[in-house]
Length: 76
Length: 169
Image (tube, rainbow over all chains, first blue to last red; front, side):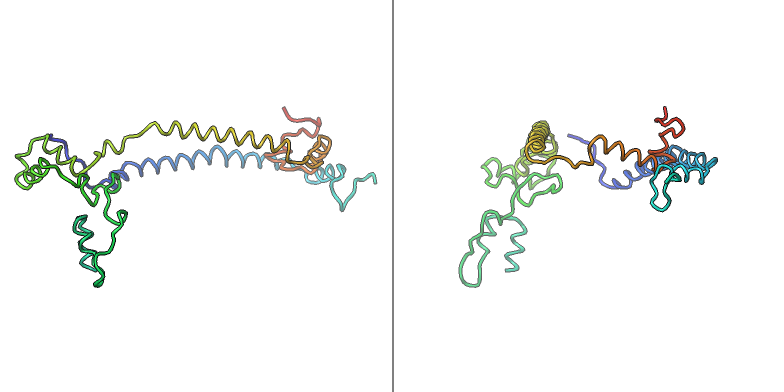
């Protein structure tokens, strides 16, 4: 009955030494993934939208559609 | 009283009953649940009392032999001593069971029953939905959202082609 004596000390340290680098790496991957898959495309989308945005034209279109209460469509 | 408390912590059932004396009124009744109990728990590895309280004669002689050098004990004797002190080994108490299957089955059963109840409720208890859910109303609602340019960059109105008055492909 000569079993090997189990590890009695340093259990938390061993666990941390194993899991902390992995956790760190995964967090970095998650952050990088979010940046390049969400925020960069979003910034591009907004830049594209406002590159050739004509606010006056859009306003007139909205006015003609009749959604404003302060300015009615030009026909009325 | 303090002496009684201290002796009770040692965990000898026989002693704790006789020492519980209350100010001249005799022995106080000690309920079973108040005495130290044995249980197999991973978090509490050394219970307060031995598992086998009433030792047979050979177990008693084994306990006497235990007081000497442990090198003289055979493997069977060591296991017998373990089983006197403990009911289940860690491997035995930690082993899983198939109970989770019945638990999950019960869960699904109740989900299903709840679903039936909800369906019955929808049909027989609730009144009609508001008129704003009608098809014509919803069409006017969506048209107004497009007119207002709701979320024109990445959202709703960005999917509508305003020149050709249709959804973008």
